[in-house]
Length: 403
Ligand SMILES: *Cc1c(COP(=O)(O)O)cnc(C)c1O
Image (cartoon, rainbow, N blue to C red; front, side):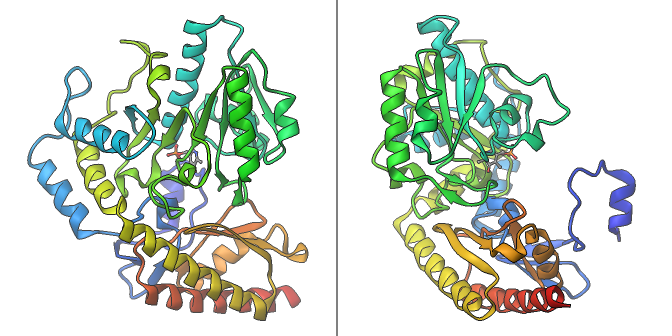
């Protein structure tokens, strides 16, 4: 049996984990083996979207485990071909590239866009336009693209040629996008940045600017993808399509895998040898992702997300009408945010810590917003029980604030 003291002794502490170490999970529950059960409204940050120890995913993993684990990309494998085919046939894209994480997927999008510009225009067309408050991962290129200075601090010099506009402010983007712009990268919901939804006009105008200046439009769908917002990808809620998307998190339902999807003309930015990764398209990851994809990409799943989102938001609003802690409930589908009232700003992490004491796991999205990412198939009853527990946590929070 281990404790956080052991954790702190042996691990570099970049995470500051909560006072709860689960030993197993089932559906939307996590257990510590000592009688504590926790309702999970975090899903490993939008990853275990089909619940913990999903029996159908276990079957596909075990089946693949008895077949073929790893070959590297010096040879192909069936599960990766099948997964690429499924992703391409269900979207506006023509080709896939597989990697292992969200940051790697975004990194590949940015590298592809730069190389496409380099091959088709000139070496001045290398600039990337991103947005303040965005989050794109923790590699050096992706923290540079990200719009939060604290993640870049101390790692300078960062990658050159990256500028940030203001999210949902098209005039700020217009000032940055020009003939030297290789790509514009944007999240359709800034999830880590506070659960801010991109306005339809903003995205439509970004598409026009990209078309005007021959810049590629990249959507980072690492968190919004794979059914989270009630459609397979969040771009499907918008009237325009991007040229490339980054996918990861829920793609493998808990098995690490990332991908980029790209429209035909732009995939030529890469050629043999210009990018790659040892584990990308690994048979174990792709086998699980194939099953995960089949389970998520169904009308019944998208309807379930809508139903759960409605119940969740209604109940959260009821709780908030009583306690008046949040000024706004925001988001789309099961990517839900709750923005703290003025007097509670900076306290979202205190609420997360109280919630786990009350046996419910929730998240922050900045220190001013709490975030909820339940499994897409969470039983309705578990939403009710979990939010009852959350109400108790918020009640305690409010009492302690008054003291
Ligand atoms: C989580 C996330 C990433 C980074 O993914 P990792 O797997 O942690 O590298 C990138 N972009 C967005 C929008 C994310 O939510």
